[in-house]
Image 1: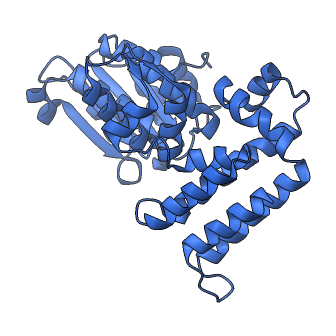
Image 2: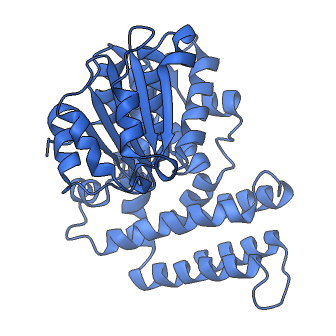
Length: 337
């Protein structure tokens, strides 16, 4: 099998109209799969050709022979794009290797499987790897969000402050559709007006408060800033539709989970924690390192249990209905004492 290829490298080649005969796109993160498909269609086919030169099949509803026949057809335009979606559901998928022995030079074949992987040990996958692209979309974890955001704005010619990165990451989580939507909205709004993205810019253009958000609450708790923590909790209680508890608790749980992991890191110095946790240096220096002194591992464990308990109570478990604002105040008090 070929060495791993990145999403950025694939998009760069596609936008440069350097196409491969076959692309295998598979894995958990559908955003990247959708964007690659969209880019191939837009760059390989003119708008007027797409009605005649784009064929889409679904694994459970077709056969390998039908896909091969379509792929071997001559296009009415410059190229033909053939997409097999839900590829894993095609019972005789290995038969496609017959086509790959002598692919049609004007055809681009896409084998797409969202939510899972195709068996890389199969003969078909070996053939795809030799002459095309085999891309497994990585599952996106919270620790990767900062680098995605930094890279996005760097590529557009902007610098972005670490706190602004954290605010965006905490507001979108690992929902890449939402993340890229917010980043594009911010880039479009700023235009050539500015070259640096600050927390104030984020608040002004995409409506995420730089002072009252789940990230700021987690930071206030971990640094034991009682006044700020209760101030933010009060603000959330007064704005329940914008800041529901179900959005706040995952952020708190994630932050204290990172702190728990830091407690068990082989070394507690800044450089080692950056490598071990995979977090941005700003978060390590300004949140994790001070919090290691503020919370013992035992206290962090009790905090994680309290957050889970608050989540269950907010959903009515236990038969007692408690307002979200009261639950949050109780949780904040418990964490700080």
